[in-house]
Image (tube, rainbow, N blue to C red; front, side):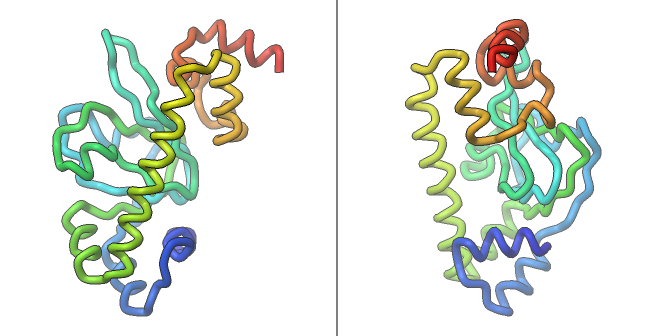
Length: 187
């Protein structure tokens, strides 16, 4: 739980009482590779902190599997829209490697936010961070070439190809696997 506490302490001070509450609310889970943590049409009830491993979110469009994001160790993840809005998810969450996560369910998370003002600040900062990242990323992303998209992904997730199948990366970039292979060959 050391990495989880370190990540939270980057945003807020953690008192002994809050540390105890977090340790009780978050449950450690070891999850095998290729496990779906969430499926389309389910309500996302979990916020995860990824201690080790790689996870992706994806959805289907016209029968094609489209990766929407890749998460690496040290990141919080969920189906953000479904978790915060408590509506059915349009996406899937899948482990790409054997992973260790700390999970908190929506009800426990809300209780922590209500009980501890500093945790409420953490929740707000986490949501702001996600919103700012997604807003910044999406606005420039659509105007980039395939090569620039790949370079941007590498700047955010160096060595992504060591953890993620090239087909998943290609679907995220919106290109064919052959085009991705040509881009990688020219690096």
